[in-house]
Amino acid sequence: MATTGVKPKESTAFRRGVVDGRSITPKEREAMLQPFLPEPPTSPSIPSKAQIEKASHKKKKVGPIRSFAHFVIYHIIAFIFSVFFRFRRAWRLVKSKVVALLKYHHRTPEFIQRDVKHLDRLPQHLSVILDLHDNDEDQGSAGLEGLVNDVCEIAAWTASAGIPYLSVYEKTGRLKSYIPQTHRSVSQTLEAYFGARRKPSLSVRAPHQQSYSPPLTPPTLDLTESNDSTNERQHLALLLLSREDGRDTLIDLTKTLADMAQHKSLKPNQIDSNLIDSELRDAVSTEPDLLILFSPRVVLEGYPPWQLRLTEIFHLPDNNGVNYQVFLRALHKFAKVEMRLGR
Image 1: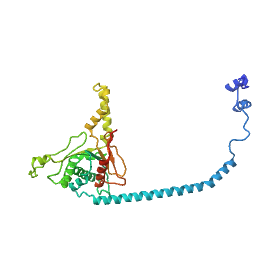
Image 2: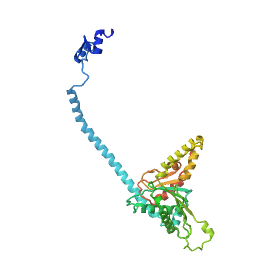
Image 3: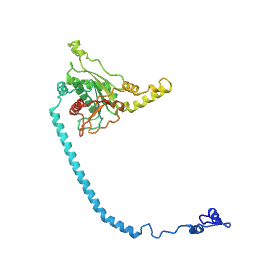
Image 4: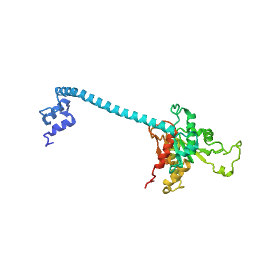
C-alpha cells in the first residue's frame, strides 16, 4: 500500500470496518477514502438543465417540418405504386378474359389437343396444388364438392392433352377418404368429354393405399369395338397427395433407416441419395415434371419437398381459381424451358 499512500492501519480498518474495536460508519469509511480520490473535473461533462431545454426546443422546431415531408413523400410513393398495381391487375384480368374467350376448350378433347399439338414436349407427370375452401366465389363452388369438381376438370384437361400421370395435392387429405367417389366423378367427367366409347381408363390411388381401378368396361356398354381399339385406349393415373406425405414420410423413412443401421441390417455407407430417392418413389411418387399453382403467389403448403428437386413450378400473378388458361399457359411455358439438370 506504499504506492498509494494508505497506511497499513487505515487499510486494515477499511477492509474490516473496525477501528480500535469499534465499527466505523459509512460516512467515516468515505472520509477515510476521500484524500486518495482524484480531483473533480473543473467543467461539468453532464449538460445543464438549461442546455437540455434549449436542445429540445430546437428539435421541436425542426421535427414537424421533417415529419410532414416524410408524410408527403411516403403517400406520394404509395399512391404511385397503388395506381401501378391496380392498372397491372386490371390489364392481366382483361387479358385473361380475352384469352379465355379465344382459347376455351368447350369440353371437347379435340380443341385441347389442337392447343398443345405444336408444343415441342409435354410433361409426363403433371402435378397441381388445390385448396379446400369453405366458400369460393371465383370458382362458384365451395367445400368438398367444389374441390372434386376442380379435380375432375383438371383430369379431363390432362387426359385430353395426352399426359398420362396427374397428381393432386390438397394439404388436408380430405380426398383420400373419398377415393371411390372421386373415381366416379372423374370418370363421369371424362365420359362427358370423350364419350362412353373413347373415354380413357382411370385409376386413382394415394400413398400407402392400393390403387382403385374398377373394371374398364361396364356390362351395359355395347361391345362393338375391336380388341385393338380397346388396347389403344388412353389411361390416366390420378394420385392424391396431402401434407402427411411430405414431412411425415421423410421422418418415418429417417427413423426406419436409422433403426436398420443400428440393427446391422443396413450399413451406414449404403444410405445415400439414391436409396432415399428409391424409397420415396415407392412410398409417395415420382418427381413431377411440372407443378401448377392456381393461386396468385407461390405457396407450396407443405408439398413433399423431395419430389420438387427438378420440378418446374408455374403460377400466374393476380389469378385466383382453377381455369383452363392457367393450365394451357403452364404447358406452353414448360415446352420452352431448357432443362440443364446441373450442366
